Each structure stands twice: as C-alpha cells, then as structure tokens.
Image (cartoon, rainbow, N blue to C red; front, side):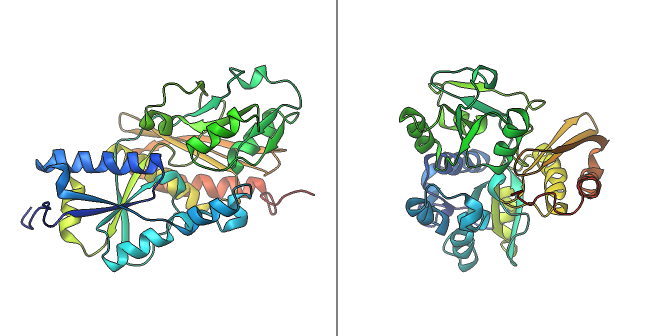
Length: 319
C-alpha cells in the first residue's frame, strides 16, 4: 500500500466496547493487522467507548433488550466516533449488528469465524433433558427463549442480560438453574473452566452471524480499506452475505426470534433458517443449497418464503 502505515507516533485507533469479550475481539483485530504488516502493537490504540446500551444495562439489567431500543443501543456512539474521525475502525460482534449501517460507513471485513454453536451452561446439569419441569432458565435472547419453549414448554424462562461474567455470576447466585452462552465468546475469553456443553445446530440453530467479528470503517478511507483487505476472511464473508440477506428480508430485530446459519462445502452454500413465535408455540424452518455466489439471493428468497408461510402477526406476542 502507498499510504503511510500506522506508527506509535500516529497509531491506528480501534474503537470497541469495554466488556472483556469486546476487548478480546479488538486485541485479535490488532494482532492480525500487526502480523499482516509487520507492525508492533504500539502502532495501534484501543479506544474504549461506552454506548447507550452499556449505560442502560447498568440501570435496567432485568429489562429485555427490545424494551430498551434494540441492537443499535450498542453501536450508536461507536459509529458516531467513527464518522467524526475519533477512531479509524470499529470492531463488532456481528451477531449484535443491525443489517444497515449509517451513511458513510461500511462493514465489509470479517475475521475467521469461531464456533457458531450455543452452549448449555449449568453448575448442576449437563443438558436440557436433565432439567425437571418448572426448572428456571435464564436468557435475554428472544431466539433462545422461543427455541427453548418450543422444545420444553414446561420450563420457566427469566430475563438474564449482561456480559459473560455477569451471567455466570447470576448462575452462581442461583438466579437460574442454567443459561445459554455462545461458544465463540467462551473460546475467545479462554474460559475452559465454564461448565459448558455444546448444543448441535440441529437442536438449536444459532443466531445470524454468531461467532463472527466484523470491522467497520469509513467508506472514504482508502488507507484503512487497503489494510483491512489483508485480514478479511472470504469464506466468513460469503456465509454472512447469505445470513444477513436472510435477516434483512425478515426485518430482523431484537423483537423477532430468528435463527440462520450458512455453511460452505466446496462451491456450494447450504443455508438453514428458522423463524419462531416469541412464545415458542410454533417454529417454521427451511434448508436449501445454492452456488456460493448466489448466497445473498437465496437468503432473501428463503426469508420471503418463510414470511409467506408464517402469515401476518406471526411475530406478535400472544396474550
């Protein structure tokens, strides 16, 4: 690249939330960029940004995210700082990202995807099948809540929001008998001590883009675009193109239980999708394949077909 590389005197500023997992993802991004260009860590600066969602989480930790404003609560301030030039790139968990970015920003760089599966986490049980009727399950995810109640309507679900450490403490305090965590987060944090049992995607299809890290940039920043191209993982990008097209066509938000997973096999992409009523009383799923380059079209087509099968009011809460 012709533009000057970052240096300790003029570091590339990496914006992130301040949770341990968010910081681990920012450090991974820094390490990959440093390795790609033969730079020291000092050529980068990690900038921690507190978002509206982080502040609301402190005062409303037991409210569902949908009642606080949705996914954008955790990106607004970061994207404002990116647009203003306070930071040069922003590192995100793609599972938490809205499908549309603000004007002037692009989200087109992905690191190699981690394990996409959910994990069943409990200090006293090893699987859902071990839970007695009426057992308490903690989760803030509408998808997980709906999937759980679809399979085990005899269980009680309570709101369980917070970062990995917060949710593990709630388990220790007896707030719930078990919870679910993304294996990707546990792996990135090195938490081999957590009593986690992986759940096959056939049993609990993961959230769209689960396990993927995305890097957002200003659309007109050619230097950053060139640098990020060196660490972009093409297979992850191909998979997310299908999954996020599926999500976008469903108008996915924190108020809609949606699951989706794309996988690659040679030149073929397999996409599985699922939509559920929020109370878990009904689930509609689909499973299709196509050439990799047609993944986004397949995602949008599958979403339209599932919406047609679901009919009006499918995502509304039943009284």
